[in-house]
Length: 196
Image 1 (cartoon, rainbow, N blue to C red):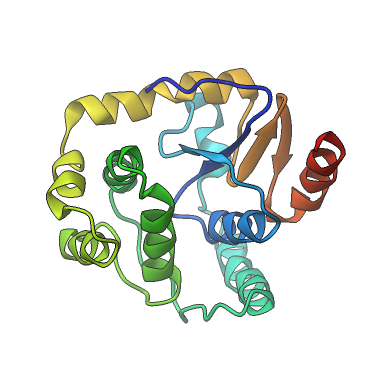
Image 2 (tube, helix red, strand yellow):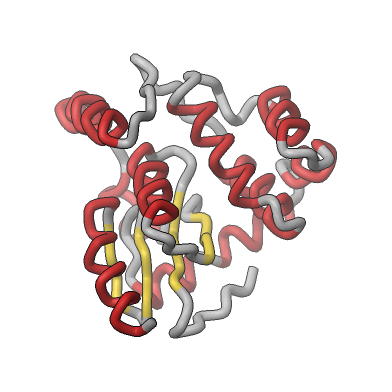
């Protein structure tokens, strides 16, 4: 998967696993920042340990913190975030839907299903329902979930992650400058406003 690094464009690295990615993307859209989205579902091996959530205190804190953030955006957060699924397959489905111009719709529905409804977004019946809601063929997304070539493309994105030193989500990149986290968007917005 080739990602063209255009200095005049904002990139957003995201993962459907992360409630912070959901909050960051919602805030970016509210600020009229319309990035090019890049899945962060395969992690460069040198940072793999740093991004796993094995710390039980951190896991507990995540729910406290997300509840505050979701309340701020008037989003109901489920009491318990569903277990992990095969994230590359969900991102593969997104990448194919995105090629058809419905990536943002699909993305927001996946985030809503996971964090508002508590659904397992790796379940193909959930993917099918979302595709039907946004009026795109479920077959397109479902066939992508098991496609080895798409999976290889997603793995190839670790090269750009290394190049741009992306270590978590959401990470927004503008002119190779990194803005990590949903709370850094105001700095990015200020820079974009000066340019426009």
